[in-house]
Image 1 (cartoon, one colour):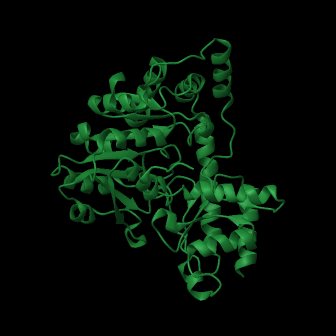
Image 2 (cartoon, one colour):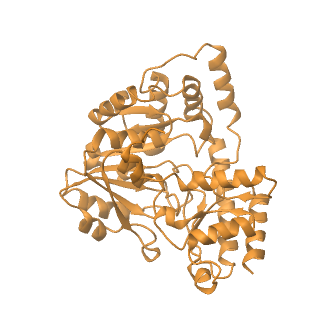
Image 3 (tube, helix red, strand yellow):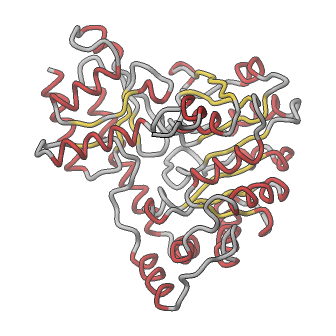
Amino acid sequence: MSRTSSRLDLIKPSATIMVTMKAMELKTRGKDIVSLSAGEPDFDTPAHVREAAIAAIEGGQTRYTAVDGTPELKNAIIEKFRRDNGLEFVPSEIIASNGAKQSLFNLMVATLNRDDEVIVPAPYWVSYPDMVKLADGQPVILSASAENDFKITARQLEASLTENTRMLILNSPSNPTGKVYSESDYRELCDVLIEHPKVLIACDDIYEFIYWGDGPYRTFLNICPELRERIVIINGVSKGYAMTGWRIGFLAGHEELVKAMRKVQSQSTSCPGSVSQAAAVAALTGPQDCVEEMRQAFHDRYRFMHEALNALPGVSCENCDGAFYAFPSFLEYIDEHEEVSDDVELAEWLLETAGVATVPGTAFGAPGHLRLSYAAGMDYLEDAIARLKSAMA
């Protein structure tokens, strides 16, 4: 075999994908597995969105589009920001990609130079640090404790900024914790960032539609409009509209940043799928009651999982205000049981013993925790909890 890039030595495969694949492998071998590893809604894509995709196929919308998305999709994204966030953008400030993940990756490739530092608050989505490394940057992990509600403070941020800091990633609601930055949290961070004009702020808002906190959802730009030229917002239709497989994400930001990202995308994937773009237009501009129905279901599941996990021996699960993940601490349980020494071994033990697939917190920069997705039906979740309770007893 010919050699591979040395860049690959810096990264590891996605932990969530690895666990999901392991669970699928066990299922194919006949083992009864309940998988709480994947961050994928169990709902069908809404009917009017599916119908729009069929109409697009029948209407011949099966060719290349503009690299950064069709005019119809970009206008739908602009209207979404106006309707849901009270923000105004123009088409040159919008780019559609093959998922929010690609939007963020393109941003890093377009803006980072060798050894530029990117501040990644922990617990973090598993892909953030490795995407930074693939773009020749250096992830700077800033750990947020449960005592601080798993959110970084202005003091922490101030202490972590250097001459090499190029970007800060903010994810709210958070994967994996479900925590949401409040207006006052954002304002305090903003007051620090105003003094550091070289730092971009990448706001990953992909779980915006799965939010049940007090007051309306607020993105960082709502609180800190004076930093508009340095703020980019990443979002998409995967989570809120149950469209994970359609692969449509988007980014809004300064025109020059978007232009640079368009260049990267033109030489990698080119445009997103034309039919998926038509479906995303229908999702963003059509009836929104389906979004509320799914949000309410996730909230009901959260309440069940939060109570059930806290009832397990040696487990402590924090409150959260969004997303569809529980991120309980199993530190007490691990300390009391010799058969497992850390969260990685615990996840493996639960998979083999209870048939429940979870993701170790170490993959998210938070050892001692497990991430459990409740993007699944209540019967499925009740089964998972019963299995955990039996195995852990």
